[in-house]
Length: 142
Image (cartoon, rainbow, N blue to C red; front, side):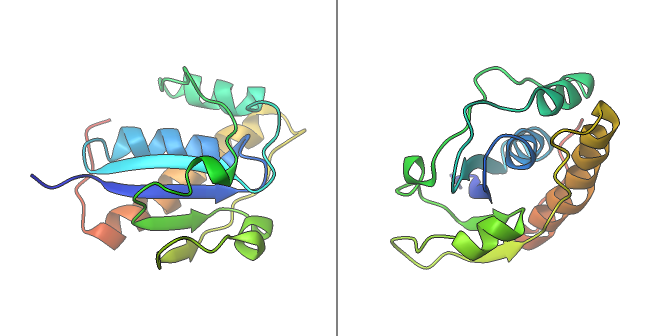
């Protein structure tokens, strides 16, 4: 049996964009992708706007919390996606070569909920699509 592709979404604080990407990938490509997220400098908590944007899309946010890159360093990762320029520059060296793609997204921290919704939708369109294309996957039913 084939295992799902493991995708690590890397950001600086792991409190917004990477968390939304993790949830969206795990939902939209369920069974085909196992998404994880981490930060190079994790924040104390996930942004309330990110949680609300996911909740409004009917997605589960239970158990989300910022993680340091060290927490996932030994996972069997097939692809790393950096979603901010700082994470791209600080992307660590993994124990084995792993492909990395960079897809930057606007940081909505401190902005109204509409900004979080726009970033959520942008992630769903561009990042989920890029991962689907990278691995030749089908879209799961939403």
